[in-house]
Length: 283
Ligand SMILES: [Zn+2]
Ligand SMILES: [Zn+2]
Image (cartoon, rainbow, N blue to C red; front, side, top):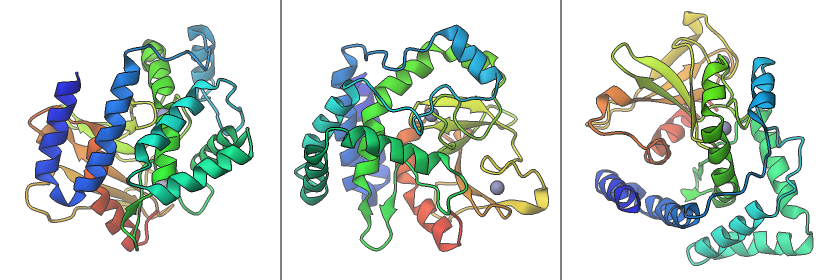
């Protein structure tokens, strides 16, 4: 497993040398995550298949961290390990957050609640994404990434355990059935280009209409379009935009990739598309 992932990272490093530093940060996170994976993550959400199914059928995502505070201390412990991992490369950002955590024992839980409130509130002016770089400094926005990562083992475990329930629920919204966040990526799969949406928080994938905006549900073809960025061999990427809500989602055509794709790394190596979308006024 670990060798496989490091091979994937090596490939991406070669293909996208200008993202070398970011790829390394992500790879370090992966290494720590894999170490953790040796022990099964605790079931911090305690949700039975029956109540999960009931929620999804009522169009409710399984977990709503915007309102529920986490009670289990395990994610925060993992977050502290992630901070240590990032300390050398990002001393000031990690020192500031440690200070915040030291000052208030509920700080971590509150940060998580705020993060999910921001990301799941589509009425807000901008969508906060799982991975962003500031346009001026060209630096990774590290803390949100680490906050998301601190919950990742628990969300992916939940999504995997309830995989059958989720698949049978007929979920067809633009937000993730597990964590409520808006979809991070759009994927085209199979011969006829069937579309799915993907959540990087939960590694959850679900079907979605090919010609519909995942953020506002717009289906009027006049209001939906896409652009691509000319950069040699990378014609598997495009950016779908909606002129109704001015939002965008990156689409990866998996049929144009010879090997299985890793959505997390794909999201990272297409950051130039996020910058381009922002330049064109999409959020
Ligand atoms: Zn999710
Ligand atoms: Zn829209």
